[in-house]
Image 1 (cartoon, rainbow, N blue to C red):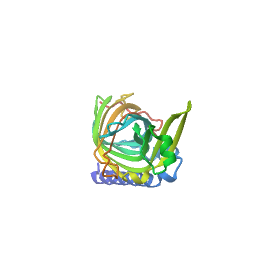
Image 2: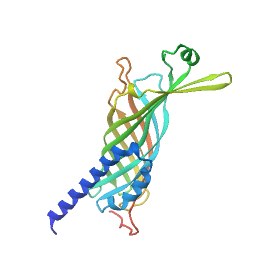
Image 3: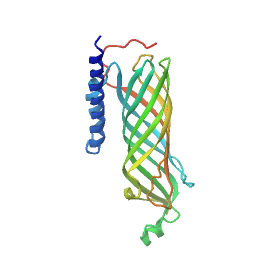
Image 4: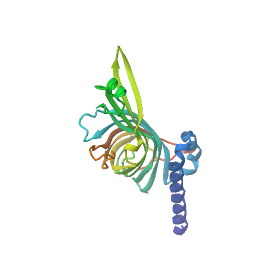
Length: 250
């Protein structure tokens, strides 16, 4: 066996993956067909050493260090790669292209508009912040069923809104305010989780749960300290495996 050819092939495959991640991360704001693109690329990106697929689920996010903050439910969607290092050890990465963090239950703040502030005083504020998150985790499987993974995650902020809500005359008043400029562009922290593969094959659907602990103060104001955190329940679906079944991994 020519090890040089194998090494060159692995290098070329790695370059294709990095180029794909870069392209997808850069142009996703302009694209509406993320799932279609993932399906089209699935056959090309899935190899004996690499598993490619879609990941989606729901997370319960909150702000660390904000006493009045309460958990907020969000949906997320993206794609993932499992890159085989040796036997049951992998690098797990990808991009969450639709991912929200934030919290609810917080008090409203003065906006400078007296009429607005009078109406919404004693109301409730919900903050939602959108990110592109890129995790890089070490992924270890046990009997090719259960797995543990953990590592680092970085995020690029795309949008941020405050939602004001108040009960008013047997109804509700709602107001949406763009607060994108109040939050830092970048977020980063630790991420770790556990999952279970539905089949003992090398590549199969799996479900799991992970936790993200943000290390960055995301609010630009010196008077406010806020860090992202969330617990996420997810499903991973491999794409483009082809008709041929793989032999179970020992």
